[in-house]
Image 1: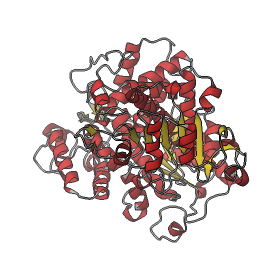
Image 2 (image 1 turned 180 degrees about the vertical axis):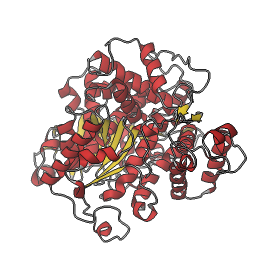
Image 3 (image 1 turned 180 degrees about the horizontal axis):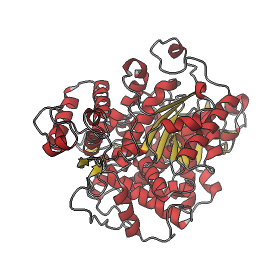
Image 4 (image 1 turned 135 degrees about the horizontal axis):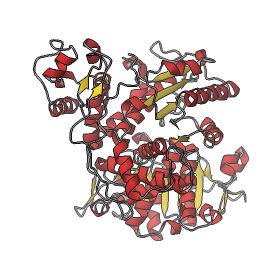
Length: 603
């Protein structure tokens, strides 16, 4: 990978790519008074090095004066192309492939030669391309990562580098990193331990950070903590790119993560670290250890909880009920399931319930049945195998230990089914969903497990089983469903991209001391409030993904406002800013992928 200095910036922040209309009753109009002409950027490179650096390269879009100025005349074909020409050609290539993995590989190749064009087509085609750069395609990308490996991107910190992390971080060429996404590859989506091949996750996440959240590509860093793998197939695979040894034991593992956190925050004290796809047994203690010490969050626990809360708020509006009146059955008691439920509890408390009242609205189901009172009526399977401290607080007296999900629905009468089990698909049956109609006019069904093969049910099934009355949100994208009466339901994907880019953007702009539950709740409310009347009329529970930059702007503004209200900022000289000032600040800070004139200060 070529080393680039921190001055190699080619963002044109001043001209937003999309307009940002009023997004809710509390969101002010954003002033877009900007420079009339692009600001030139200074490069220390000339000649062919410019063409080999994806941060600078424009391909055939260099005009003739730039070609002379940068000593590249004759090194590229003579015709000058516009960015629009390049966008059309790139999208024509992508649409010519009938395989999503091939589309992803083409995008990776484009990313490696022209980052501005890559992010430009992501921004303008986010609805079409987000499933290609992230879920569900990214799961296949990770499985094929070793066989398809072409070029290093990001940083790898391995067990063989112990004691050197604090110096290794200076190998990264950029002095200003705002967001780091890190994985240890132990729980990649629903695919399990993929070790260092999990790097596809941070790369994909940060592509969305840049396109959806307006983070500049030179200010993000994908990272793998290579602690080994327990995947026998990978240990024997000659194409595996990681250390072919079993995973470190707990003591060594946690010590290695400590070294990593100290190193990156010493090098980039203003950065935000997002933990991604860590197995439950590590994710929860790591979050508990670091969340009040460093500016960090776990997207699988907090991000999924936040976006699900936003989806529930949107679904509640569709169903005509209040959040405080809802009851929930959650299939899944892992980090994602319990993290989601905790975030919903925080939302219900913020909406007026006591914590005890909010907790009483939940039944959590493990693979052997409900976490309930051990009265022996259903065999007490959870109690017999032992209930860990994390799950203990979710044991409810409302149902017996081990009660089946079908009987939980009949007895507890949840108004919302949450699917977060990440087991084989089809966990929600027709009997379960249709029986909700006995007490609920519009059941809310949220099969959230990824990838698509692990979904608890499909939107089409939920609509069919409820005669079109269900309100549905899913964890992966699905096509719209046409009902027997000819009406069309657009099922929203409950995608973390609705919240994590805005949260990361706000945290970096405001320099928040930590990412609090209050900030996550503010993000969820802002996301739900961003829906338009047209989107509600289509049956959506989230805004259209094509407006994701507007949503990220709204989320970032809400998080910054919460940070100001709770005195959790470090980047501002004053603790009071008007909503309009916040909105304008965030708009100015959002990266916009356009070409800027390049000059060589050395002449």
